[in-house]
Length: 331
Ligand SMILES: Nc1ncnc2c1ncn2[C@@H]1O[C@H](COP(=O)(O)OP(=O)(O)OP(=O)(O)O)[C@@H](O)[C@H]1O
Ligand SMILES: [Mg+2]
Image (tube, rainbow, N blue to C red):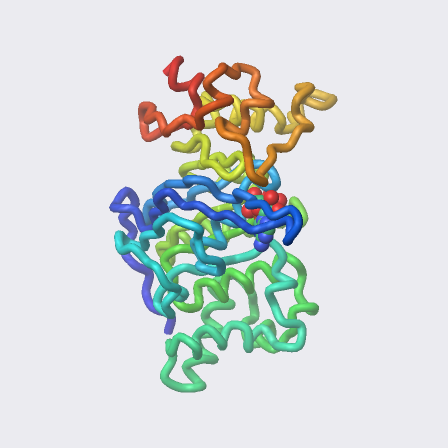
C-alpha cells in the first residue's frame, strides 16, 4: 500500500528554504569568456502543504532555481534547507523527498517502456516494496490516485498511447510514488490544451491535500498561479524581486516589474494589445551584468541609485516583501 499522507499543518516551519542562492554559468568559450548570472541572491521559504508560484519572463531563472533545488546542478553559492536541515549533497533520501515534474512529459518518459515500468522503477530503486506483487499493487494504486483508470490497462500501455494530459498524470504519479515532501513542477501544464490544464491543476491540488505535498509551481501564467498558489515569487533577471500571499500581491503589486507583468495579461473584456510600453523589448543582460537593478533600463520610476546598487529586501506588511528602491521609499 501507499504510505498514508502526513498530517497537514500549513504554516509550520518551512519545508524548503533557500538562502542567497546563486548560479553562474561559464559562457563564451576561450576567446570571450563570461559568466551568465542565471540566479542571483535568491532567498525564500516554502511552507509545508502549500503551493508557491515562481513567475517571471523567459530567462528570468525559474528553471535554474528548480534545478538547483532538485540538485541536478550545483549552486555557485548559497544554501538549501529541507525541513530545516542544510543539504549539501544530493543523497538518495533528498532525491526521494524532493521530486521534479517537467513541462514535457513525453521527453521525461521513455518511449520503449510501459507506464508500469516507469512507476515501478522509483518504487524499486527506493526500496519501497517487499515483493513484485507489492510493486504491482503500488503501481495500480498510484494510477488510480491520479485518475488513470482502469489501472491495469493503463499500466500496460506505452507513453505514446496516452494523451498529453494522461502522460502528465503519469509524471505526477511517478513523482508521488516515493512519498515526497516537495514537488518542483516546472510549467507542468503549459504544453497541454487549455481545457485539460485545469484538470491537472486540480489533480495537483488534490495531491497536495491528500499526500501533504508542497509545490514550487513554475509558470508564465499568472492566472494559473492565482488559481493554485497561496504565495507568489516574482523573478526578474535572476533576482527574486517580489514575494507574498497571492491575492494581496496581485491586487497591489509593489514592484514596477510585477505591475508590468500583470498589465501584460490579456484581458477578455478589452480588445487589442495591453502593454504598449516602448521599453518592453529590451531583455536584461545576464552575462557580466552591470551593477544596480537589472530592471532599471525598463523601469518607469527609475532613480539614480537604481543604476548603481541592487536594493536589499524590504519587508512590507502581511508577509510581503520587495526588492526595489522606489517601493522602499514609498512603503
Ligand atoms: N547550462 C547552462 N549554460 C548556460 N546558460 C544557461 C544554462 N542553463 C540556463 N542558462 C541561462 O540561464 C538563464 C535562465 O534560464 P532559465 O532556464 O532558468 O530561465 P526560465 O526562467 O526558466 O525561462 P523559461 O521561462 O524560458 O523557461 C537563461 O539566460 C539561460 O539561457
Ligand atoms: Mg524554464
